[in-house]
Image 1: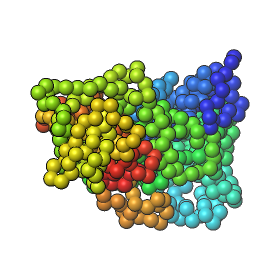
Image 2 (image 1 turned 45 degrees about the vertical axis):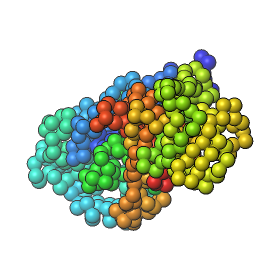
Image 3 (image 1 turned 180 degrees about the vertical axis):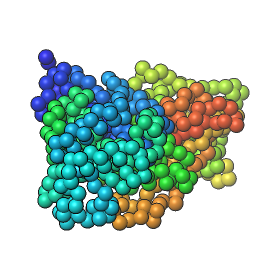
Image 4 (image 1 turned 180 degrees about the horizontal axis):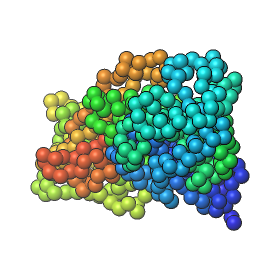
Length: 532
């Protein structure tokens, strides 16, 4: 079977054959997917499709304390937004009975024991490589305590099931890890059927094996746990799964912890999980991330096993290459900081005159737009500073104007066949007519003011107080027809995503600025926040 070449940045999977690859993405339904998850999702999907195999999305719902139906639905929605369609959606909770059977097998074969050592003491014993006092308990005791744990009775709550591996191991994850704990909270799918639940460390290798996963993609921070994963499959004599390690993706000035992101939502620092300043999938898409750009960017980092703190500017520069190919061009002028230029030789008798220009100067297939002309036009105030008498300026997409008066009122004459090349200033403009459209432009900045938070940093000490700014603009009447999520360019200002299309005068057009990877804006129109 012929195979497509690998996308730039991706390596072959060891031992993979066409039609026989099964990958899985196992999110915990305890929060919204973020940009870090996108790498795992898209890599698993890439390999499943590349080898004409299968992709499983499995909800790792083993902890009733954290999980909610809301998050489960949101994850499915986010996968759809990323263009990812799993071949099957499964739940670890569907295998609870099977996993419990495997726990019984470990007990019967002397490979697990029940322990009531308090948590802090257990942690210390594991650090000091000291065996638990219960490690050599009788099979009878072990079975009875496990039954007590699973009954939900209070006296069972202090007990947990631990694997009997090797307390002297240099790998801390091999020092008799916990496999089962009691939890009386109702589970969002199985209700109160179960009173004790397997840990991820036990459930994952079992379910991976049962579901036919051939390659488990795990981030490099799981490297120590890989030995434990393989021990469990070996001890239970179940089919082994290959592990393929990749580095997680971190971004500078960005917090990816679900708990900390939840704090921003609860304390109204953002409007919700889909806030455009948030690194959630729905947040970055709302900011203007292009799905194909995201795929290309993630694949280009795919094979790397080195954890890097990515610069957003590198991603935004990649994003720009994609959106620039389809972002229709329009113009807009600041509503409050503008200057009127009167064109003394342009007639007002027929005040409905238009010029036509391409939506995309480099691609005529996108069609043409009409631009209204008039003898009074609005210019950006910043563009008229130190303008001189007799200077030739270019009104973009229209033509050359010779400035005839600068004192008092700005006046000029339209020069029909003026030389564009000789004029230094090429500026945006807007006919001063009532039909033009109001638009609100939003800019955003990083929520965190420190490039990389250290482990002992309290993120609350590094919250950026200025992360949102808006300005009012007067725009092309053609902006009225834009649809939600469309991406455009306001010439000399930058790229924008339509967050709310024009509905009425009271419900106007709302545009979100999309960074383009550059440190400065396209022109002198710098905006109110740092350009990033």
